[in-house]
Image 1 (cartoon, one colour):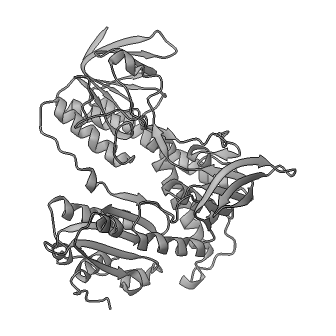
Image 2 (cartoon, one colour):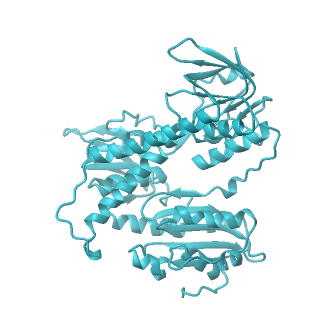
Image 3 (cartoon, one colour):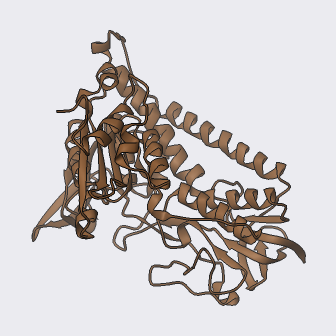
Length: 464
């Protein structure tokens, strides 16, 4: 029996960050990971490889349409093998980086499937002899997996999860994407840029669920211009195979049956907590109706057992899991920690990007808040015009009485980077005026956020 101060189960962005922070604080740390490399879904089959593909295909599109910039190329083509090779290199480089960071901190890593023996003991089973680890504090950080529809089981060949969509070895002629959230829009964009006819089927009235209505509507118009087709308010019901070997997806829209035929189907309807094989009952733990482990400030109902990231309530985002990991380690070490999920930004890495934090306009209305809104269109931004990125807008929602920022939404080039400025102001309770009077370099697209903040009080300089 090996004894530690803390055992972290799961080596994803929540788990390995928790382990590193705990080691920084002087704790003896064990990290258990089911697969033979660290980084979790995000690094291996999620955030990182998808961003690599998005960037490469954006470059491809820029080369295809570079004539207006004076760029003349005799032949532009994308080799999928090269595309995937670069993606894999990016993933491998970051895997090595995480492994190095963990090793440098003296964290002992155990590869294999971890399960509870009791509330203080974890067994890690691999091809070798199982090992048992013991600690007064155990952190569950096992993440999530894609939701599978009963009538659309993943085979990762024709019916794909996000994992399968990242590994195609050729460009499909057609693809139906079920779900217009971040994964569906991002992966749909990747393959549409390469020539796949992409049709997106969404159950809800708007794409990019959870986004501000202004942003969602604008995004749909922009993505339609890029070749994506959208079918909202459409419920998927089944699938069959045609005589020609294609897939026929059955659905209903406003009470009428509709069908979609495609070579591939990508199912991206969300993710669910992954706790399979943990033997939670041995530790005295149960999950709620959504498969999450109930926690209060990351503490479960069993003293000494913590849960973070996608297995607990809150946004299923890597950066949220990282913050959970740091907070759990600091609490375990007897230090102060703080979490505020209302300040976790959400990003969709399409082109243009979509980023938001805080309340949407509809949420503010539903809460009965007295608020005011400022907007700024990128078509009036000098840098956006210069780099041919005028599709987009920035929007700031603020309290009418205090001017405190309630929410920010951006659709535009670099939105993922700009949103941090809004989060920073909101973290200290900043006002729209504070954001509007923050000096932004000129020319930058980030000036659109400043102008939107000024527009809250009708003081935008470059907006009408």
